[in-house]
Length: 578
Image (cartoon, rainbow, N blue to C red; front, side):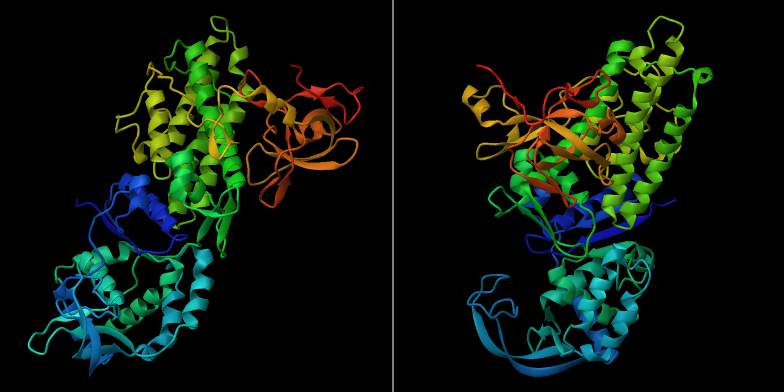
């Protein structure tokens, strides 16, 4: 049986829309994992190179035969008329341009009499709303109302789509809008009568930046005029703007250089979908990477690999079904449920929901480790079989997490599979392998590596990892005081994160701390902790973060607050002596 095929096209956009190449790449990778033959078309640029996006280097100019076919058919449908006028065109290639030199070939621009072909937009404007209003055509669904509102305000003036190159030749030079459409249709097999277009077009996805919605408007008019059915989807994401410490806009490419492309890929795809343009500060970027990648994912990988290295001599042990408990069954069911959700949400372009499904499995796995406490199951004793079962299950869950991450963070997924000893094993790293629990081979050799995602802190002049040494004088700049926890609440969007209200004897502080797994909210209330009170404030999910608390890492890998005795007054200073 021949493979299913899919075409994914990303229209060029401005700086805040360039990131749409990443959700397009995630969709292409997912389709590839599902066994499809996928072609991803986008304009080759630095963004695609840095984030290692595979693309075909075709431009957006359709073949001359498809352009001619479209113009002729639109004329026959009464959607296009021609009118002779003077146009500013390239003397060499005939491309219409208003600059001094042709942007296509660099030729001289002249004024010449040509036949122009105009599309009657008003003939189809009222039907476009109905065309785009179909369920699951505009993706993500959240954007449908925005797209329709903007389409309704588009002008209905007749639209120049092509100029005849010369009176002697039946050749047309399309304007950019028609040229791009001709390229998309040509790539999908349009005008070739072999049934290929009917098979491929329903699986063709068109990514439009917001500044190119006029293209979508015109293309839909052409589809209506020629009775071309709906494609697989029109995708339109909100723009994303990143700000540095000086609140100046910064390119994702610069942050990728500082953080790693996989971290920024994650940040952009994990952005909670909104209709408006999203703006993120450097502090928010740091917090997201530290919490989601360093504390959650990276910490889990380190814990699993360390536990197997320590208690099973670096080999995946054999589980014993007789020692299985309810927690094991819950972990298995959550793992088996995850890939279906990831597939669903990437297909509908709700990327943050796909990542949330993976985060939930990471959280369940972390809680499984805490509840089973493998370090307390003494090896060699009567609980050895139970210990082996626990260790096997966390390794298998980590395999599910790694494969589920392949469309979203391919490099991180590969590094996890390398540590599990299954990188290069197509059967164990395939999407279809996630349909069954327990495929990870017993006695697979674990290969520990460096930390997957080191914690990041603001450094002098930019962002960077922790430095090995600091100047002693820097200690004097840190204010640490004893503070009492007035309240603690879970932050819904972040697994394990608590929103604390602290009091230092003078004022209250709003602080975010990733300590929920070791210290439930009710347990913390009234406790005294060490507060770093003079940090630059930041904001996450609308919550202010006005400081940090001292924490320590437990044997289980959780973060736990450093508590101060109750008889120490709030506001007492904590300092380093030198």
